View 1 (cartoon, helix red, strand yellow):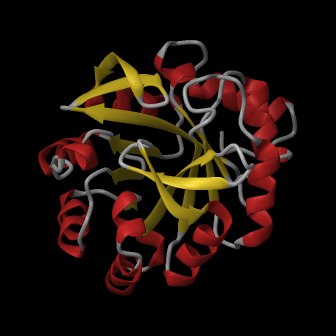
View 2 (cartoon, helix red, strand yellow):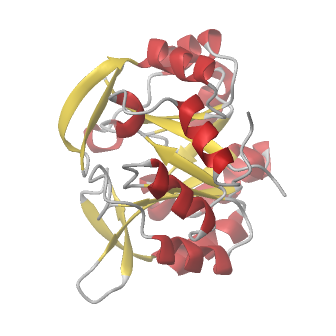
Length: 252
């Protein structure tokens, strides 16, 4: 059995790490590179950097920041935000990113998944799905930092992304993001029945119990969290110790 991964997420705006609720009311929580170095020393398995304003503002993810991150940490990291072409992905991978994450551009142009996977391999491609459960109960994928609903339904879109060459799905519940109310584990478990590639769970981590729940009952392969790490409520090392105590296989 593959060990479960713990992945701090750093939402980046203009080079600084920020955190809010549902991607709004943002608070500055530190320098993106320094915070990444701290998490690497603390035992994080990977990092995810998301330039949360890039798509809405029509900007590319800052390549120079990616170069600084690559120079400063020794664990894999994924970069997302504003990636809308094969050239964008190539530039970030060449700058040192281990994987790229695409969301809005993939919904607008699903063949972008095929193109990146064909050139670099599926292991480089993470398709992020920021989905919101609507009043009718359907989970609808959103774009532009969760601000615009799309016509893509969570499960069918995840299946299509896998078929096109995605190596992982990063599913964020927009209903739970930043609320610290726990993950929608039933939805994660249902998603795991429909695809075979790894699922990274995002949106709602508020405690060790929440993360343990999504890794077991939710059957996620990795847990991504931000607030509980950024605001010093628990370290990555202490979290892993607690998960070990609960008989969840994580890397020491």
